[in-house]
Image (cartoon, rainbow, N blue to C red; front, side, top):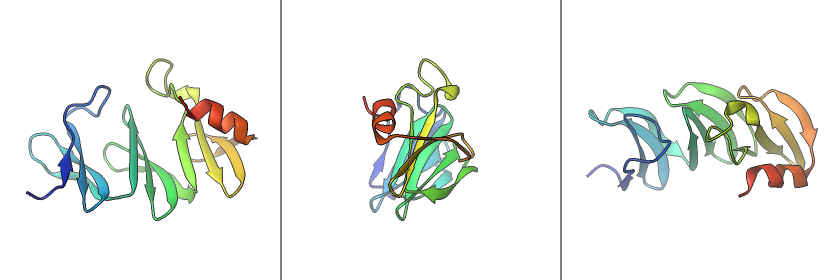
Length: 126
């Protein structure tokens, strides 16, 4: 037993991959081989389609399901729009917080515009 937890099949989850938890940290392994795809070093992981929003050491970034870094770990928090990748698609928006400022960003972390905290919460909370 190497992991504290291995996810079961998850609706909208990464095909042929499972999330793992080891010593309180999260990662991703291949379904049949159990080969590590994303090492269990992240404090938080939220997956939407083939995009994974992660936090490590108090900074947030974005990875793809093959562990390619899409957005550098420069924000305090990154959250997808509450409908991101479910019904509307990836263009619905990604939101970030850095200090007391809030932004809409793209997958690469480029700021599209500054927004209010209210708009941040309305778009990222169910």
